[in-house]
Image (tube, rainbow, N blue to C red; front, side):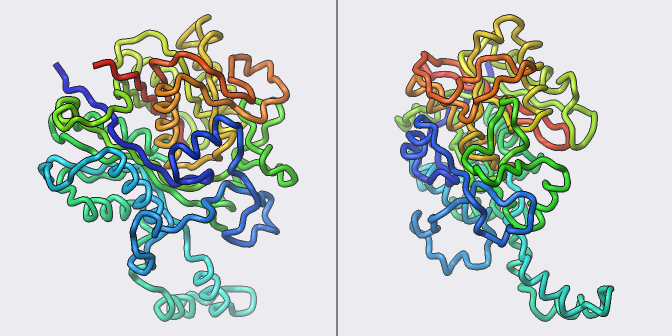
Length: 425
């Protein structure tokens, strides 16, 4: 028999706040974390809005900001979410084998040092061209090597290992929007295979900077509904025009069941299914018939030993292609039952946290199980005939919820599905 994996702690830092219960209340109220971008001057960009983490400081979790002055936003968010998750789990780190405690993250970069890069460009301008020699000299003069190294996606995992003396497996995967869901699935597999007893898993990301927004604007992936920021993310709505870029971190503590029971841990839910596939199609587009998403969901259902679920937390990005294809895939997997399975996208409120999205949405699924209430898809005003399922429009819905499916589909064609269920002993 394979070892069972349960969730015993959760924490996050999001555009809607950092307290689990306060954010959950806002989600159930259908509030939005989207506003005008303040992290840089976005006035000349096609997209002037985002879902920023506002008013949060790492001192909230007992850390000295001076200690973290060279670290990127992704690391700060990761530390905040991880410390909250570990505290929530009640783990006594002095009483567990550190070689059986690991970290598996799906984290991206933490923002770019755009101001210094601009200084380098200005210093190197020679008429209409850039003098690369001057550019290099200026870079060697003004760049901080520690700060530049800290932008790397793997740095949060290294810092968390040091903070919690996690001497077991330490991994970071970056599969775009699917990253933290994949990290949680793979971390659960490590526990199942008896390579660890406890894994801290999730993701962190911050792409709200000129390079990140420029890239997504060029891909025409971002909403340009600048006059109505809180209505910009509108998954499955006929007038959707792209996603809203967010940032933050979300972490869970995964634990082998008997290990958790032995210390009397509270159990938030059990991870029972994991599916991972690739579309093998185009890097920026999901397969139009949803072949990767279909195979992924079926794999997770088989792994979990179930054929239906009570709720689906959709990837639901608010792009024309993704929402249509996810609808097609759900119908292919569940048949007529798809019309009776509620599906909502909480990106309508929180924005798209990219690598951190999947982990935050898994936490939302666990809260839905705990409270028997389904979060809404807000801004659903104009039905799309190609998106004709039950998207829990605009208002939270009380409903018994024992088994949930969380989808994450990323650029590059990566598909991840996680299935969690109520723990019943």
